[in-house]
Length: 84
Image 1 (cartoon, rainbow, N blue to C red):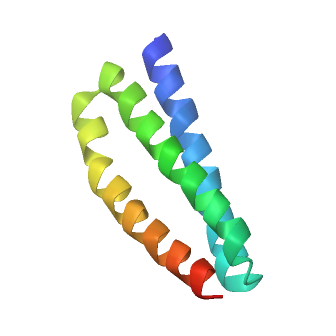
Image 2: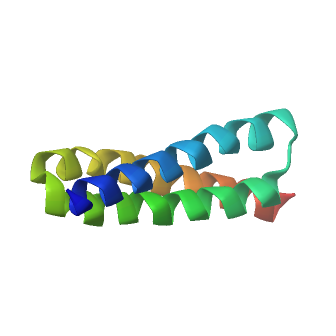
């Protein structure tokens, strides 16, 4: 279905952003670039949740703790960027 395909696309987009964040933040110490990536990740997770709601409500709700964790990590990343 179209709803499922859209949800899967957003899931893979957030997965790619998640994979990009760690090496940028920890490996290259690019905290400002990592902040841009993690904000995009936060938005992609929200989009994944919204689109997944149309296909599978349980799967969408299971992404909510992940959204909360990434929101917290975003504040930590922002704090590190601000202090440097």
